[in-house]
Image 1 (cartoon, one colour):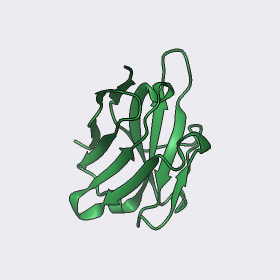
Image 2: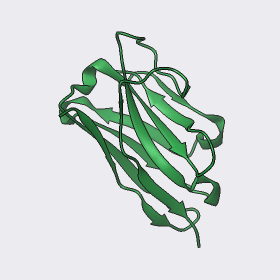
Image 3: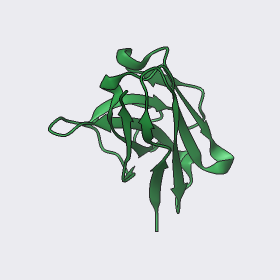
Image 4: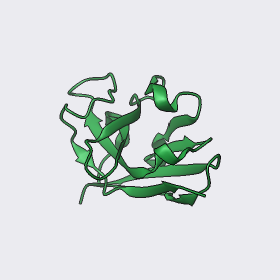
Length: 128
């Protein structure tokens, strides 16, 4: 069974840090770009960051630049999102999504394009 599984979410105070993981099974992430999305109830998915298949290119939305860092460990088949300086507005369910490099070698944070796999999400709550 091919799947992505996120972990690492939780409750953290403002200014704190969390590191999310997106672990793949049944698929080889070397052939996929990965995007981290977040969603709050009643709103659309918001693309937060993405990384190319090789890891040499990354993209961040303005609201997280300088605070979040995306990385990947292809031998471990895992992608990470290090989140520092967390703010209450970062509270959301965070999802990772994989998009085959056959569609494009460039990663994207756009939710409207087709992704091949989605994880089930991990909740991040930033509150004092």
